[in-house]
Image (cartoon, rainbow, N blue to C red):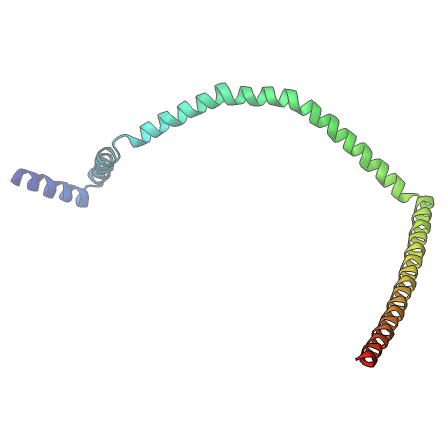
Length: 153
């Protein structure tokens, strides 16, 4: 125990007064702490990282290359078709004649809708009038029936 105490005091003294000793002491302390507390965890992590990288290089990259070779040409074809359709829509949108037709069609639909609404209003008023007439006839019929019943009693 005293030898350890003397060693520690000597180490402290050399750290304070000798800079080379201080630096080597710090390096030794760091190595001791690193080796004791970490137990080569970083080395194991590095090996697992290397292994994962090799697996990715061997399998994943090949799969990606194969999938890209098969699917990218189809994607390009579909994108070209989409681009062609977009361009045709844009050129049609500029056409003034098509705009006039759309406006005429819109006005015709509005007119048809207004006629439909007016027709529904007329039919509704007809149904309401018919209902009121039938209601009045039924009232008269039942009031007449009540009068006749009261007469015969």
